[in-house]
Length: 99
Image (cartoon, rainbow, N blue to C red; front, top):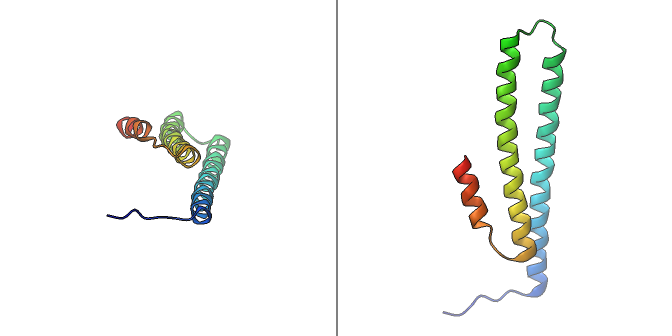
């Protein structure tokens, strides 16, 4: 079988596209964090919330934060893969194990 050859220019374009995609994922994650922060602020301002409601909400926030940390680690792996050309399979397996 012959190897597929790609020009340096095309390789640079592909890497730039991948980095741009990662950047967009990070932006959407930041937007998500902001919306969660706004929810926390609204809940904390409610005087009628019972302690049980607040505790339930805190558990939901904790779950969201755990998931977002996992996403951040995966995004970091993607960036490292682009910059170094090596895989982050061990980190990904660890994240899957945590999930």
